[in-house]
Amino acid sequence: MGLRINDTFPDLTVETDHGTFAMHDFQGDSWLILFSHPKDFTPVCTTEFGAVAQLAEEWTKRNTKVIGLSVDKVAEHGRWKADIEAFSGAKAGFPIIADDDLTVSKALDMLPADAYLPDGRTAADSASVRVVFIVSPDKKVQLMMSYPMSVGRNFAEVLRALDGLQATYGVPIATPANWVHGQDVIVALSLDDAAARARFGEINVKLPYLRTTKMPA
Figure 1 (cartoon, rainbow, N blue to C red):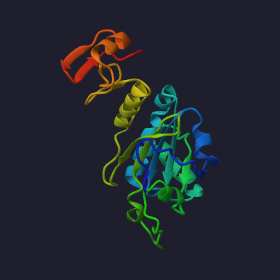
Figure 2: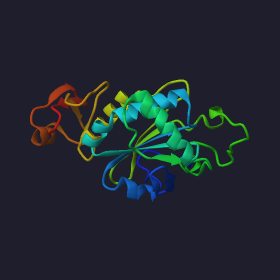
Figure 3: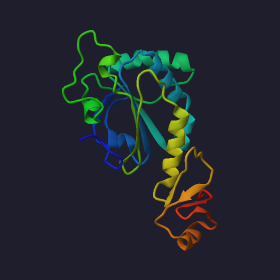
Figure 4: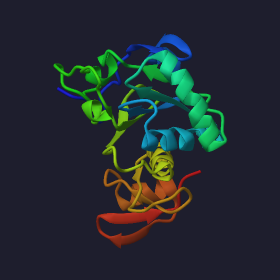
């Protein structure tokens, strides 16, 4: 059985270019984003790692730790980071998990249990290792996005989704389509109109089941 939303993210011990540690220890009480890649020194992945590096201040503002994963060794990650930083103009200060034995990719259900890396392998041999996981401070999986190798990830959308998750975490609201931080939010159906007004103040009843309110502070 693969991971599902609200499952506990596995407390795997991982080897990275920042040392070896358990994932829950690394995350601490922060939010966590893990973004995975099928191979070092690949063009789309290089642009994605660069985008993550350029957003360092945004991750910090959101109390979020980021960690990459690629199906190669620590030494290769170190050399690849030089390319990433040269391309992006930003320091890649986050760790990258070395998953050349596929242990983490299999544990996160990105590859089947019988997957292996053949001699002369290419990124196509681990093409499904293209998933973004967002994990809340209670170590629960909140979001998963899978991408093909031909489509670069939109990290503006990752940030938007993170903002939505943080805005609704433990609060009886949801976000509508195309929502961005600061816009109105949807009141949860668990609250009737009176309870919604008592909790949030003014509400806008668009439909009996669709009520909006200002985003809580």
